[in-house]
Length: 119
Image (spheres, rainbow, N blue to C red):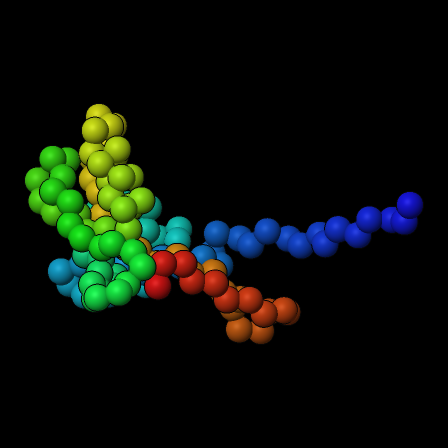
C-alpha cells in the first residue's frame, strides 16, 4: 500500500470570516468577531421568498408564537424546522435567510478561496 496523502491546510482564523445582515437601517457587513452582540433574529431576510408556478419548492409564511409574527420559509423542510423551533422553550427568536456568512482570502494572501452561504 502506498502512502496516503492528506492535505494539511491551516484552518482560517476568525478574522477571515465576515457576516452580512439586513435590518431597518440597511445592509451591513462586518468581521465575524465584531458581530457577537448582533440580534440577527430581529433583522430582515437578506433576500425575498419568490413564488411562481412550476417551482420545485414551496415558500411561504409561518406564524410564529415565539416572534409574534410571520417567519418566511423557502421549503417545507424550513417550515418544519420553524415549527419545531417555535415549540422549543430555549428559542427566543426566529428568522430564516437572515444572514450571509462570507469566507474569503484577504488581499496578498497565498491561494484563493471565496465562500458565501445563503446568498
